[in-house]
Amino acid sequence: MMQEPIRVAVTGSAGQIGYSILFRIAAGAMFGRDRPVHLSLLERDHPTSRSALKGVMMELEDCAFPLLAGMSATTNPKEAFRDCDVALLIGARPRGPGMERADLLESNARIFIEQGRALDEVAKRSVKVLVVGNPCNTNAWIAMKSAPSLSPKCFTAMVRLDQNRAISMLAAKTGAKASHVHQVAVWGNHSPTVFADLLHATVDGTRALELVDRDWYEKTLLTTLARRGTSIIQSRGASSAASAANAAIDTMRDWVLGSMGEWVSMGVVSDGSYGIPEGLVCGMPCVCRNGDYEIVQGLGFDDFAKARIERTVRELEAERDAIAPLFR
Image (tube, rainbow, N blue to C red; front, top):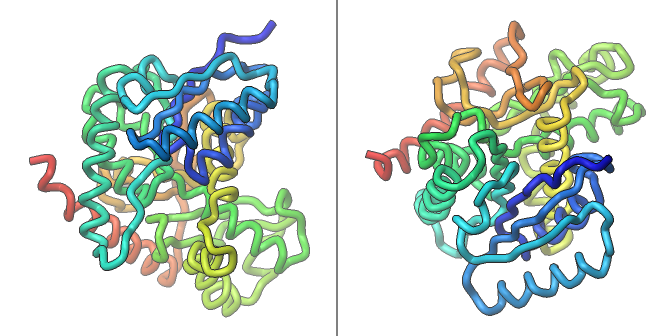
């Protein structure tokens, strides 16, 4: 017998990432082939956005997905998030011409304060919120701070795309399948300062840094990772929507169904582990089981890794401090 439908709220649902993710959710890629879903789709109150979303919903209907138990569309966050089990916060304000990062943070703060308050008021207390819209770590912090009655563990930011990219590069360099690469850990901010740690990574059971040159790791893999999003925009004239959607599916699937002992990189609220300031939403390696996650503990670092983690944490602190006055 099929289970009760899981209610999934998706913001920015007519955008590129939304378009890339909705059909896969409805097909069972996120929660399994036996779990029906109800999609609650939120878009901004603009004629073009409403029209685009109407077209997306018609396409979803035309696919006749057996697992799609229902759909609804709204421009009201409270309607979108009411009784939701999962919320994918994809919609965000992109940086415009001449806009400083501080301006971007402030404009997004208004969006995520409203959405955090709506989640606090109407979502299930066990809701799982994944923030995809950039700057996703700080947007997740904003939403979390705006939802005081929800557990901070309800909120994560998507850094899984960085982990997937690092795994792909390491697999290609060593000639291995991506599925044979394990324990690649991504730390910090989903930004050019993000740090992929290979000290504990393995490829077919062998330590990764025994298989690749340290110079390639520090100067090629990390540099490519930092610039990957920009490189994709330069090549295709649009952002990496499909790979971001795929990483969101990976994150939520592992969070809900379990990661089977695998390390999964998630932007989670720090509990003070590894000296990362408590309460900061920071990318860290986690293991998921029983609908919950645990931060991987007891890892050691060399001086290079320590410096890179400190750098990305400082950036996260600066972003948090820039919008903290909104919560005083």
